Amino acid sequence: MPQLGQKIVNKSIGFVSPFIAYEIKRQDISDEEEKILSVLDEETPIHIDEIIKKTALDPSQVLSTLISLEIKSLVVEEGMGYYKKSPSS
Image (cartoon, rainbow, N blue to C red; front, side, top):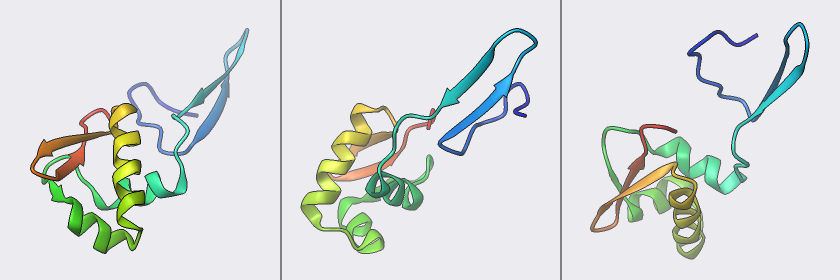
């Protein structure tokens, strides 16, 4: 059972209150998004070329996935092709 203030790291968890069952869902994350998020951190921006190398994904797929992650507010572009996780992810 999650504790107050604990970050949920799995895609979905459930818990039961005395009256209602709740389910907390993390945003739907694709395998490609998860792969890109795994190479990023909140502190140091990484250039898109390095993301492509580390994930072994197609460059066009990396770019479209980064855009999707930006829309979901999980990634921030720092400019000049550098990306990092947003603090809220």
